[in-house]
Amino acid sequence: MSELEGLTRFVRYVEAYLPGTTPERRRDMWISPFFADLSKMKLPSALFTIGTLDCLLDDSVLMSAKWRMSGAESILKVYPGEFLVTSSSRLRDGLLTLLQ
Image (cartoon, rainbow, N blue to C red):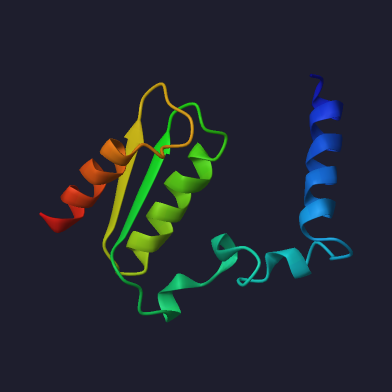
């Protein structure tokens, strides 16, 4: 897939998910918590699980860092060679980490 085809596909996904919204509106924290000022919130501990092959790896790493910078506990579990981490054993391992 060329870069132009990838960008075109991305724009189509955004339009399907958020039809008729402006780029500014898409930065609303209720649409994308990535853009929220987490320092103003009292956040619980969070567990972020992600595989190295998942297209949201960078987002998960950055969100985990933002979470921790807000003062809340953040645990990031990255599983090599996996996509979306949904297996119960992986999630159980992550939850056990939170409880320690």
